Figure 1: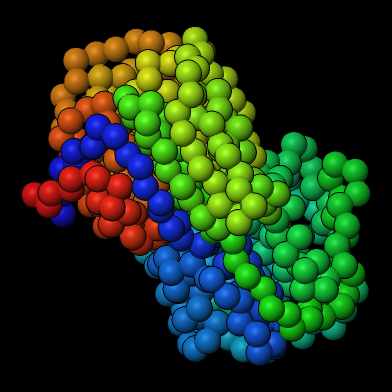
Figure 2: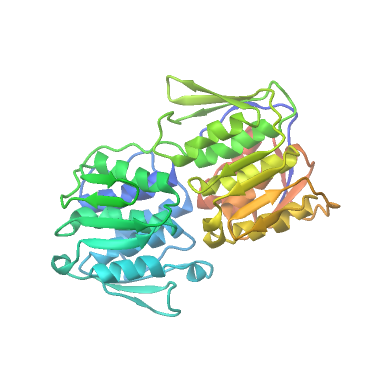
Length: 412
């Protein structure tokens, strides 16, 4: 499938964003461990959450989580403390995404997890073990995926002595770990982050509560991009269900885009309005170590606004749905922008241009590639994107929402 996208000259719309899949998937694991009857409400309707719901509800012997990295990490830990044996697998790309750090940690604590194909990668055979013999202390490098840490944290209240996690070095994606701890606390767990690198979870079961999932700040980032790239000062978008004091680290998008000329108004009804203001920085520098999922949005936005940038803290982008640093360099070149990388964690643009081929943008089975590049149609008419269906991973009605806002999308 290929979409050709044309943008409206002015946008004034209210968009109902999807619920946060990050919060949804954490709440589902915790709810399942609590054996409660109050299923979290306002759950995300995306692929990643749907595979989690199916896995936890059906608990089949072989669980195929498709392309859902969150489900792979969280379920690996969850299944380790069940008195059952399961195989967990996913797409071809998922079978090339490393999981050795988490598996080693779980096996060290007391789990029994085996690799079925390639050492260090899914698929996995998980043989549930008695929790009584599990250890209560583990050390992890802080620069690995925060989902490894979150996976361990969520099962920790059900270990006989709880769990102490010692993180070494610099901790990346810290807000995602803090999100996990906050949701755990809402469900009655006792968690404490001491200093920079020590997390302690006490042994106590979760409580059955009514939990409401807030809407997704990551999804909001594409609407911030649209406002930033719009040529009309009258462009204004309202986004319900976004909390000013959010669990989500990606709520920083409001502050980042203010530097790019987008102002956020927070309303008492837990909605926001975003509109264009005058701002034109000569350079944007930002460390994405805590918000890596915003990187693609900001790369495309700054390039389209001709604002040079230097973005650091991108090391986790190499092991996402695709190598996002490599993908951005390739696809931005099609639009006439020569990006460069450094040290596998830095992406920058110094204003260097080339002739644009305007070939269709490839999405690499990565939802965020499609969603970050679509707003570029405000600058590049009739932008074409291959495999636009990948947005179902996190924002299934993204294209419908663009149409609602006045974009014309033709299937070619």
